[in-house]
Length: 381
Image (cartoon, rainbow, N blue to C red; front, side, top):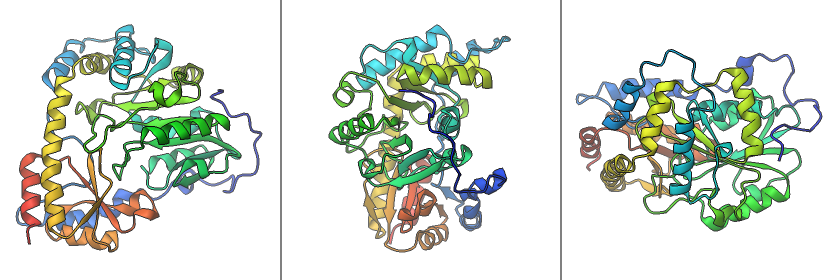
């Protein structure tokens, strides 16, 4: 499958002379600022459960690897060191069940958000091409399509999409924000449909190691793809599993026919992970114990917050994986945000992730144990 669009340019649905500002949506988090101020004024201080940013320490073995590689005066390579590629291929086979993964099947990236935002552009998509993503989704999927001036469409089931002009299909399992996990049978069906119609599937699997009531499966698993990576790319991040959001450490794995051209484009763009970060990733991917410890932390926080929300009259949907609880009181998400802000708790309104989330809020598990307990105390009747 080609990584570059072969559709001829056609008239775009937006004016060609629009500015970059016109092409981008309003940055949603700015709308939350007044509620953040309200929550911060609580006598006990704010409990910020709005953004999924890690708060626990970077594991010592990873810090040590970073420090040991600190004397790195030369430029790193975009493809990464052989040791980094070995670490990625080994992890993909060990953790995802993928087979016969070589260095040609992997590509380091500078955190997953930059990849999501710039992938349509790097694939050569533009007017007349279409990008599709889940109806409830991380906003950057839409931003990436807008930056490329491509069309975009949200879906409930991607196999119901009109494949005409569809070049890039985003999957997200486990989902941000809902925590929903796509079953192996659904992934298999979607991959078969996409291949039938020549659509590139890029699966955002950054929360795959955080399954609670489900065991997430990668599109790279042979039961899903039949032993072929054609037309498939998986996105993985170390931000959540290893507390490395500040390191900007992530990678792609999948079809070499897609990753090869991306590597060349990223070389020209200088999109390289720092040498110390590359060394840190090698250490992180080689150690499973710190991931187990961090999972236990999140599982305990999840149990406390889930019980507190249910006791406060919330209903929780999906949330079988990821770092969030998708909760509702069957009212406007902004009414819920205000209600919780009055109690010093800040959460993300569901409509940040699409109109279908207008009655939900996303509650992150990323606060310290003490602050999670404080939130639970404030939610008691």
